[in-house]
Image 1 (tube, one colour):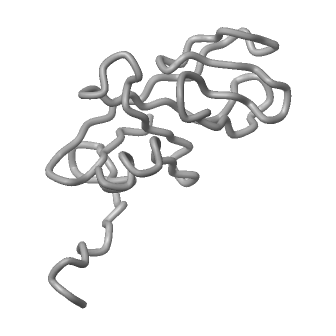
Image 2: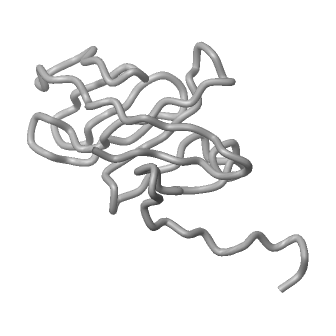
Amino acid sequence: MGSDTPEPLDAAPRADGFSAIGRVAELDAAGFIASKELSATVIRDPANPDTILGVNSLCPHQGCTVEWDGESEFICPCHDSKFAPDGSVTVGPSETPLPVLEAKIEDDLVLVKAS
């Protein structure tokens, strides 16, 4: 491995409850980072790119995994519910928001605390 290759990601939960789900470079390249294991998606806040937002990515309607559209909302591919970046419902049939997860950047890692 060259010195430019990052260390393998340790996704195990830390003592503080946070788990690494990716690197900042991945977040910035893709616009989001998702972890199926944690049912979590982290994005940069479209209104304030210095802030990151984390949500539980399972749609409360019937448990499908929502997808970030890359700009302004999460969309459920099963029944087209739509959610704002903060998880609030903008279009049903879901009536329940996506649960917000604590997320932060530490060094070059994107961390999320799944509940």
